[in-house]
Length: 548
Image 1: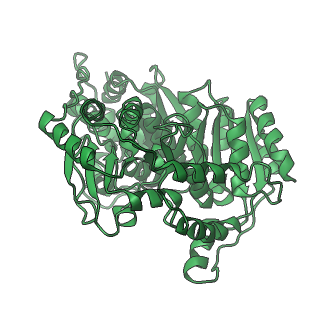
Image 2: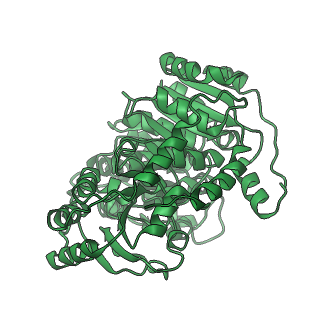
């Protein structure tokens, strides 16, 4: 048995279903071993696409997504998608081939110190220097990647080690996971006392709620205590938007309705909150609120995130323990806030202006998709609109990268979503710029017979950057570009392409794309002048919101 065969057996032992990547000279032995494995290797068109697929797979399943590349440029191409997963708390294991150990002590073709390259963006980064340590390395890589808070593990596998013969009795290690610690009862009582004394408590739910499968416990907590819940971009759906205690999403740095709720509150209950999602200096500027931190991990150190108390342990147990003992709130001080948010979301349902307004695109999208269908938002101006206005009813049905926030995740992310949930519609909302960064993966989807919809918000410029430039500088700078004919581009791959020529066409085109059951690109011109109007309108409306 070769070391590469033992390595693949160890991956099988970890429950790996897919490996996303590109073959190379320095991973020949691993690629050959995969031919006899139940693991499905998905050949991508770029290593960045492979890493993003592993990223979204990990986020949707809670199990490490796996990507593979050769040495040198293959490995460096993994970095962006790998860093996105690590910062967004998605479990991922990246594997790279490497030159033989006999040439690593000197200048050599394509050889880089990959372990040190990946070390700052991973939880665990190592090289397999001897074949007998393979079971330990693989087990540790997956354990670290999947342990709360999840993130990235990187394995550098030199080609001469991969080809070494091994004893047949060498086996993978037994998979073990630690039990979730139960929060201390005295800490639960401390949280109860703070909440009971609060006049205007509010919950901010983060991505940790999804990772810990605590959505049901959160809704139960909110209902029992009559406390409203706002979510971060990455926690959309942990409480259904249709729920009367849902305040929608925080994260827009302009003053928003939800921000008014935080201004009014005296106690902010942060549940599963990761600081990379929405920095406290934005929502706790004056450091005058009491903060309760409920999470599997202790709070990060930040001057705007000084705790009144922290409840560390199983999030479900913590929420249930507090809900049993705390006193329900009386009154409904968030009614005006929620009604204002709902009214704004419904305002553009019949708006037929063209190019299509962002609000209308989202309204039609929500009307067409089923509650369990999955939307992957790429990064750009559309991300801010999706985060703010897309009404998610279930966790992990609107995937937004907001820790690392990397453009290019949309198309590969939708491929991963469809692999995990083949019975659901997988759609990416992407800008024309983000789409072109990994559009080559259309071929991967078609080759693998993976149906997905790519909804391009087309404005022929970097719209989000224009938004920021206009707010800060008063004029745009170098943000324009030209696009291909996206319909012909789709057809050149063998996919279907549609162009929205008037707003009335959008909803029927989305329905047709679902019925087509293949890769579909929809080119939709968008009116991003709404970006600046949003900032002005929010300032006007929030100044008059009483919150009583």
